[in-house]
Length: 128
Image (cartoon, rainbow, N blue to C red; front, side, top):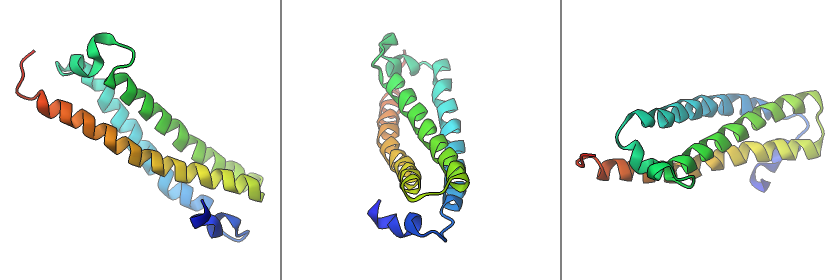
């Protein structure tokens, strides 16, 4: 947050434009990826990811994390819109935090997607 403080502390900065440039693309990617993950139910590998319907399965964790990622990105976009209507420094800091958090969440999801890829790869030659 401190690294980007000049961006959100400067009254003349148009930092919400950064949100508009970044977040919608991330949001579209996240929605598409979630659709693909939900579509895994049509494949045999789904049973492995879903751990036979357990609530703490890798599949449910993956879906929950994607939903969280989508909510954070949407909150970043809404906060930028609200900041343009009601601009003050504390709110600017919160909005900037949401942008940074949404980017950091994306990095965290890469590890989980890698785990799913490992399971799919290991199961590639196994018949159910």
